[in-house]
Image (cartoon, rainbow, N blue to C red; front, top):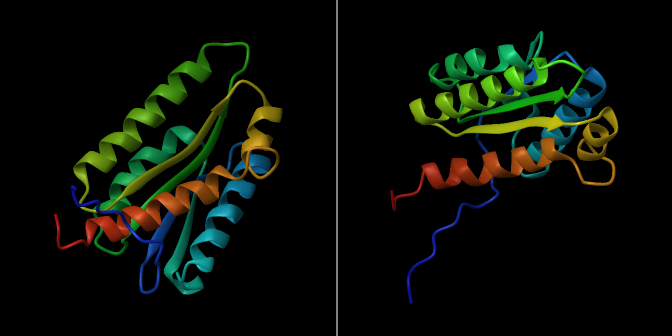
Length: 156
């Protein structure tokens, strides 16, 4: 049987940067709370979590890239909420933030995790930020924990 290598959810000694959009704060605040709670429950110290606030989701990617290359963090988590409106603005912002965070992840030596919601309504966003559909900020933090452990694996 093939070996299966999975990351563990162990954050002790890890330093994590959260990049959270201030736009749609009602949603992003809940995503941030979920991420911080998850990280702390899995051993990341309060002083080892840095929260960087940016104006909107479009500004998330460049800061993720800078933080990922700084050598100060073991992972970077992008948190935002892009909610569809009546204009094509949603399509441009959602596409660019996804591409930008992916590019930061590809260029980085640490995990850069995408926790940006792209929804059709505020109601959908709130459901994904701690209501009916769980908290996607906490899910992004879980992914970061697992990926940090995988990145430090001797099997790579």
